[in-house]
Image (tube, rainbow, N blue to C red; front, top):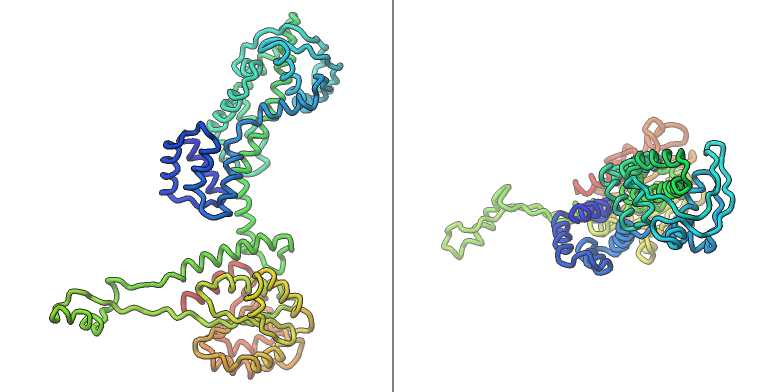
Length: 497
């Protein structure tokens, strides 16, 4: 049971539930304390020690139900029997026959008991060219199966089938499945581990015998073998969803971190938002802690003498020099015209997700006329505020000169030596007046001006781009067209302020 719990914790971690080593030990102690007789009680107990947030609790519930579901085998047969109460089942190809064999097997065992056939009326089966045509032997006595898997199938022991299937999956390491196309491979491996070779040999031998009970057993074993293959395939698919599905999600996330935001499809926006919030949370955790110098660095002589005056000048307590972290005052000026709208969307989302470490963010949006949207973000959720900003200010012809002039009227007096100004845009001004002198005033007043351009550097000075004039009055100019670039730039900003 310890191994089962360890595998369950592995599945939880794969589903992005954060579980530490101490919490793992708590889970083992909980398992030992409450036992596993009461499934609901065990689920609630493990949930208390393994899941913290509301999202993690929901993920835990789903993962627990999938991981500890052992009622699929008999549930499938009972549902088929319920849909076919008279026992009629039309047998098609081998694959479809396997799907219907569960109902036949269930009715046969209910009618006669473990080793006897069913008394239900059956239609004449239809076979494909691949399958050898078999006559309808009708109900009656059947021989006893000799192979281990054949006995398990004929005894209809649902619990033993589930346990055997799980043990076979453990032996062939079904948890290592990575891609969906491996489902057939792992299905075959599990069937072979359960004894498929002996079962196939027995079915072949029974088909050649002349006794009717033996041939009837061969037909029933073949039906139940095909039904078991479907159950094993479902089991492998659930293991894929438990252990490999989030691996694929991580691959998609890694791709979205590197791909140009202008190329991202709208249906991927929700996933990108999750990535942005996760990246921002990581940066906030990294930079929100107040760094203390303890027993290292330079001694603060005045503080040391002052705090040791009570000891008649004897130095008992040493005090060290520390550096106070001054949080930046950030002004974000975003071009929200069509060509760079997606970049602005996620940069604003990034900045406002860092509220703990950058509490003084003022945002401005423009395509021609510039307006402050800080209050819009304070009153609404981030997603709603961004959508409204794009809708209200995203139209019109891009005019950086007009935008700088509006910024000067609105808040140039608020810019001081603690202010960092981040400008996001491609600097394409439609051949209008760039008003670079206003940017120079901002440069003289601010602590730092960072220009983030989504275009590659070899395009900065082509056509109507004004980066040659603007870059002279920027402390830093960077290419920023992916989430990876954005994370690095914002992280460097927090590290150096």
